[in-house]
Image (tube, rainbow, N blue to C red; front, side, top):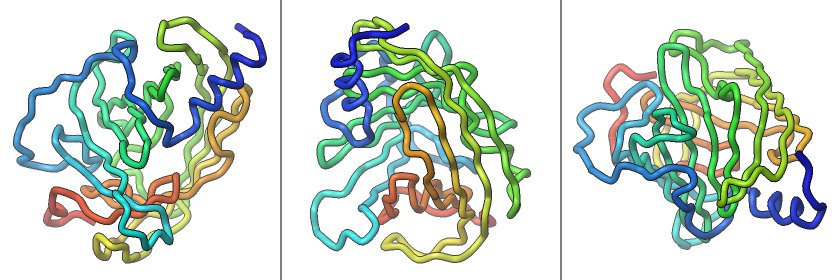
Length: 228
């Protein structure tokens, strides 16, 4: 479905990462009950987990970005886990599912925009699949809707991930052994995502460097004993 160019430009501008203002209930109402974190998964997603990040090379003492696992909710009628990034005007929520096949992204909510992916975007492989040289790819139908649920645009998103290296890195949060992953994304809805990004992932910790070039500075949980 197409829309007027001016309206679509506004939506795509709103859809850029780290945009401000809070999401509405269109994307789902997150369960607010809090529980104590008693364990951390290989892909950490327990309710109450928090991470703090600063842009790579940022030595300022400004407020860091905060990533939190908000907990179980529903997205497009499906049970998911919601996580939210805030700080410095940012407000973005991801809706994911976790199972033995890995991590799948069902959708994203940004100010004024809900992005729906079908089938879900495979963000991470099965836990036992990790190795240097691993690659996976896929394609999803992408639907962009406003906060009133009106579809503004539809198209196709193609992605490819490659595990390039495993190495030790140091950030303000400490020293970690990370998987270095490059992802490439193409879409026909105006380049909603950057074409190529690199991130660092550590099991039982999460992203040590995010695709948006944010480095981990702190977290509210410890590395699981025996984790990589």
